Image 1 (cartoon, rainbow, N blue to C red):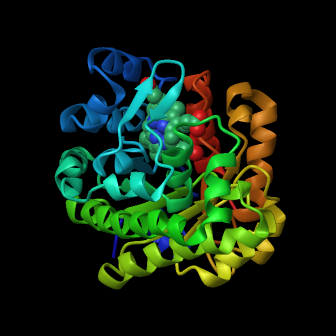
Image 2: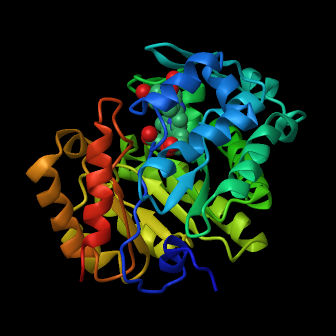
Length: 344
Ligand code: 1CP
């Protein structure tokens, strides 16, 4: 049996202290991250240099009482490994050479996929050597819909009109892109387990922009299939799914997806999740990242409300989305203490 509290929760045990980790817990709000980032070259160079990626993965664990690390990488390393041109521009976020037609799709190639992503496995192995034994290590990937939206729109900040128009007009050819992403993402997640990840998270950050009628085909089913493929080979490794912004459709993920955990976005009412989702899944979430920026009583009251609703059953404390760059580090420390000191 594992001695890592976060894994114990995912394996169905009720533990004395609620475990906590934070999405995007490595990053620009930490001066030690900015120092490594400045000397690393490009953002992708940082992701693909195992020593540096391992170092920034471990940075937040040295400062805070977090129960897990998440390997430092990005969901867009997958399109990069398929041969799509991906760059991260200072202040602009990711910029990709768009894939918009069956011809563009046919140019993507799996030939160098495993090789391009090998540095991620090496970084995971390095983190494993230095990780304190009570802490878990997350591997991760984007879900096909979210990754496809960046691949087709050519970056973030879009209105999703191009990717949706493709999915609605020519579902059969768009399915070619989604199916490719299902295959390579399952392969990539298995690679991360082999390297030493002991839990996985699948980020579907843009599931919530799909109307109900399209959610099943482009978000739910591809994620269900990835979870099935990974689970068939490594049934012992828990998987947390984060289909952000889908409201009551969390119920469908709870009943139709074989994942172990569901990560809740900020909008989900904790009491509803305790009643409807927690009997079926481990629940993770869902403090507003802006409350972590604000800190003080506002943060404490909101965190306690979440704990009082969800802390009695299997629960992992997290944010409802990633940490914001302006977050004061001492607020993170205070949140970790508050969560660990809470008693049911
Ligand atoms: O220069 C920098 O520091 C760039 C900022 C940055 C960072 C720190 C990017 C660019 N990615 C990352 C790391 C990252 N991305 C992690 C690392 C591990 C950790 O959590 O500590 C993870 C898990 C991600 C995942 C990711 N990337 C998601 C899913 C989660 C979410 O926040 O919704 C998404 C959508 C991305 C795309 C992406 N990469 C980077 C940016 C700025 C974005 C968002 C672009 C946008 O749509 O506006």
